[in-house]
Length: 92
Image (cartoon, rainbow, N blue to C red; front, top):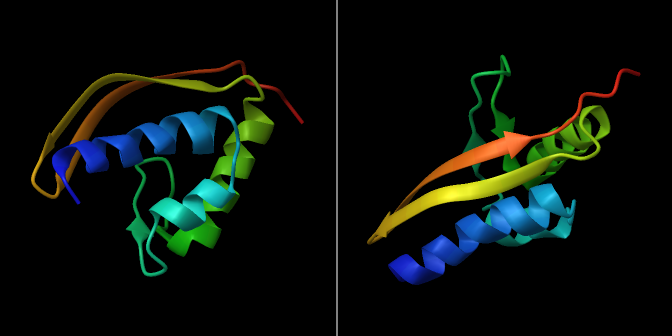
């Protein structure tokens, strides 16, 4: 993929998957063997199914969650984003 195509994938991650909760996006942008690490979780998410569970959990806790892509830099096969996430915590 080109740098611009990789940037588009990063935008879909924020806009479609997180902001709109379109879980099918995870199947489209993550490889079945993807491993996703997070500093707030003790174990990585393995594959799109586990990542979708993360999205669902966060969207339940923060129903108005909104990610804004502040910067996106892409070169060859690498993309780096600086984003801001906002939301109101809802207690269960």
